[in-house]
Image (cartoon, rainbow, N blue to C red):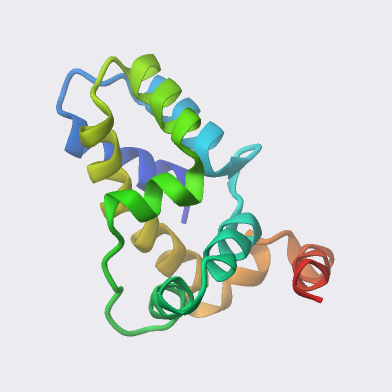
Length: 137
């Protein structure tokens, strides 16, 4: 499954029909991507660095149960306020609409990346997993 395409589709649905798919995917990749892949390791690091509530939320995204909701402020903190502002301007939308779309897309993207054992692939295989582990030690 192409996670960036799935996220792009979800974000476009939230932003309305006037959004350009290529532009949305480019912006999404700039916000949470590492090339054409989702930077799961970076997101995990940021979420775990925020403490218990965010770590619990991340656990729900990685697990097979229901995904815990993420607030607009948590998305802004995870990605960075300046990046959100620039992305909203690039897409010609307001920050609230972009954050709302990301609130829906991010949990589902992480959930899909971790479902069925594909999380290892999404973090770059064993080398990526080893690099992620080093960040926490």
